[in-house]
Length: 267
Figure 1 (tube, rainbow, N blue to C red):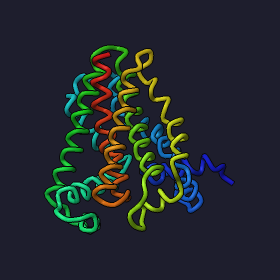
Figure 2: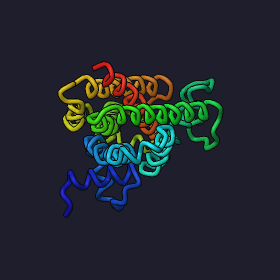
Figure 3: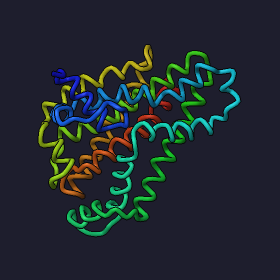
Figure 4: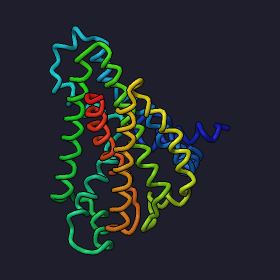
């Protein structure tokens, strides 16, 4: 029998990415009862996402011929190859719900509509462009000095773990407004589970060691995004849903990357 922590991690990777770990009911059950598995999976996913940046660092002479803008586009394409686009669907749905007039019930109806409106298109554009811009900053950072490629790779991993921790925070503190993916996750956890999430995510604070500012800034940014998402979901939707969880992951990743780069350049 697979140990529960390993089963939870496999379940998290299977749910949060396209990593071929296989799918099973046991892994899913272990995952949805273990919010700490969400940021734990972020370490694996983040390491995979950082491969384009690492490739630039590993072959600087040849890689210098590749424009930073091209690498940034490849980074975005690679990211969604690894993670899939399920969470982007949450961004689009919440973008449409954010601009609709009406009460929480009306907004929840919009979330179920598969058509993408102006609000959803704008939200998708901001997230994808923000991600590409962050990738461009990371590539330039990796090319500045011999020791900085490690920092750029570390920031990618840190931002991914922090984004997953933000998502897990909503799982621990949020309540679902209706039956669905949100309720399947939030019903099994509570505030006490947040301690495990924090313990798993805490090591990314040392990503810029001996400088602590970059890692702490990434974690703080994720916390702000989680708090804002939780407040908005409660006030506008009546609770957390799968779309809210997915959008929180995407927004926290982009914000974390930008804040991390800024903190690194100032430290």
